[in-house]
Length: 207
Image (cartoon, rainbow, N blue to C red; front, top):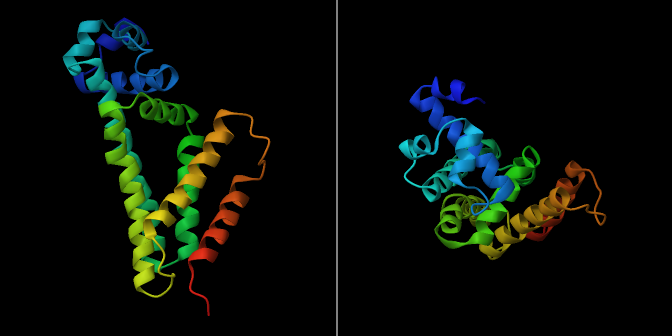
């Protein structure tokens, strides 16, 4: 994008452009690896224009993170709600697993970005945890608790079960996307189906 094109944008469109470019650069280089000068050049504006829209690089970084978390959280709930209402346990967890895998597979840079956030720690990591990690865990935990109360699942520790499920999916996805994973080369759909079968086998009431 040229400076000439960028300066013709409306204020809202320019702000949107800055957010989109920042997301890409932060995913590739991390917070410390991106300067506002580099960001401005990539957008096609001057540094003062960046500060017209965001108070600081950290503020921009956190807004990218918060926006991404809210979008993903809303999409996650929309995807799982039909299975939740139907009490379709297999469909619910298969949809959850596919969603968590596809979220990064569509944009591997997103996974790198989120891992960078966690590795760097501090307020941004807490922002990500509070607005994406924790709500995802809580949504699955509440479903497990509901099914326990309805007698469909054994009285397990719902927090441990939730972490067990999410941990496998996220860890598997990280190895598939970030390294040449030679241990598991199964089709993603097959992996999720197997994981859900094993997971539900441990949760469901016998007889």
